[in-house]
Image (tube, rainbow, N blue to C red; front, side):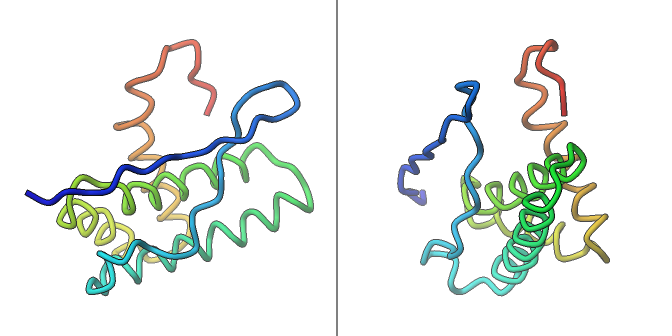
Length: 126
């Protein structure tokens, strides 16, 4: 059984005291070095995240913030999946996407099925 290190995620509070998501780390953990599938997908996700963050800094937009959340979810799913096989599964999904819009749609798919299902219905604002 593969043991994964415990990951501590820090959040910074905004002016209303709500935690804010942090950017994806720029490097993958060392145990992913041998997987081209994972490295290719994570690279795509980082590029989209950086481009979207730059657009948000120029003009705040709910749709851009939602896009950023969706691609970060994909990145964290790859990084934090319970096994290399699970990380490669998500990475394969990302790599099969023909464009950025499809990757965002994939991120929405995972948000709905793995995150929103755990939330209170009153929090469904994304």
